[in-house]
Image 1 (tube, rainbow over the protein chains, first blue to last red):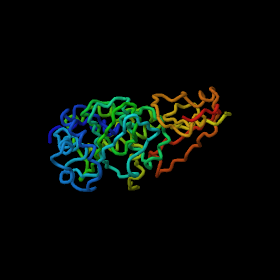
Image 2 (cartoon, rainbow over the protein chains, first blue to last red):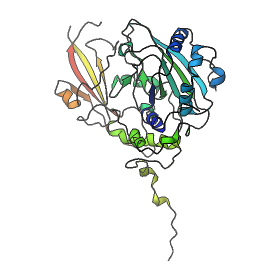
Image 3 (cartoon, rainbow over the protein chains, first blue to last red):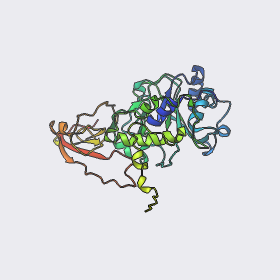
Image 4 (cartoon, chains in turn yellow, green):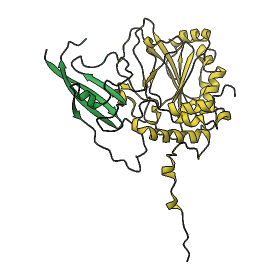
Length: 272
Length: 95
């Protein structure tokens, strides 16, 4: 498989819950996709093999089969991805939005598992156009969909500002929402959610898996963690252990050891 | 038009009144019944609840400490603590 992401990028996905790739989709394909999006709504058959379900001979069909996109999908969820759903999200010109923070779908406790969402921006998306916002690193905090609407502002929140052809990929548990479009142009974001069909272990390029930078990436502060940063690190290390197939991996003070080191549970045989 | 209550909520990872908020929300009834166009803010309006108190806000709720059990002590969810502040402001016509 070509175009696999590096171990460090995989660690960034584990720590921050998203990656951004500019120049993912060529300009002519972006234009064709933008025209198709208007009539590309609706769900296809949820839970079916992506390759069989996703339309062929269309611009959007081609876009999500570009070698770079396939490499990205494979890196995160492995071979034979499963179609979940898609949507062309539209915020019309001069449309304002109030608080909109949410986690998609319904609460999801599955361990050692994540779905991905590819968010494709087919036109240049400026700050004023209201690209989707994300709270990086929030994907270990399960909540019930829109109950977090009350968090109007979160320190470290980011939002999509990008040239046409950019794709964000994110863990579907990341807190996110739509923003106001203060321009005279409609703003589209095309989303495609995919599920894995097998364990998500070492599908990325492991060449740099021993790079010490990975520990620093997993320790990233996104500004909102406050006193709970070490509990976030424990979650990130747990997921990194799984996806990298390193069951004893830990960093720094080794917080997971506080749970795992339990000599009192060893059986001792006392003799005279 | 008289004075009405505005609310400022500071979300925190400790219940103390001198910690930096990690998220925040405004419910300014003096301006209307909801935010129609959320303008992004990079930093909280005050460095902590005590700074807001020095600017005229009254604390009407501070969080209690939560006991953590072995079962949920490592689990994460919504931000665990919040301080609710109140201030009265002159009523304005809603846009």
